Image: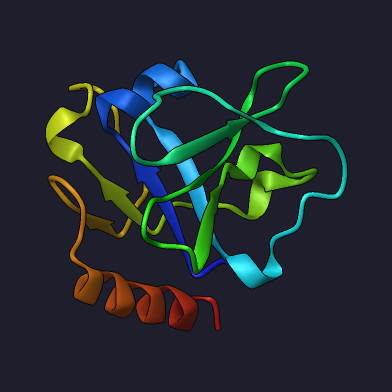
Length: 128
């Protein structure tokens, strides 16, 4: 079960996803496993490690630097992503003027670690 679901409007995500924003489901690292294949580092080669399929080069997940307890999985990589709705949206100050999401919470950049903890609790509570 995800800790939080997100849409990111930053220009880096726009470039890597070839879209107006990227979608992520924060999955606990302990519940994430690569069952087949070997992903490759791609996209923006900065502090965060963005993993892509070595065959088709699709962006699959990100391991944020310094936050080893979760993995940001691209939910559209799952067999059935219809369950996914972004609970928060980030980097709205960089969003394309026409882009919108159904996210409950919006942030001009990134929420603080303290805010993320509360948002994760609110997201999990919204599922029950």
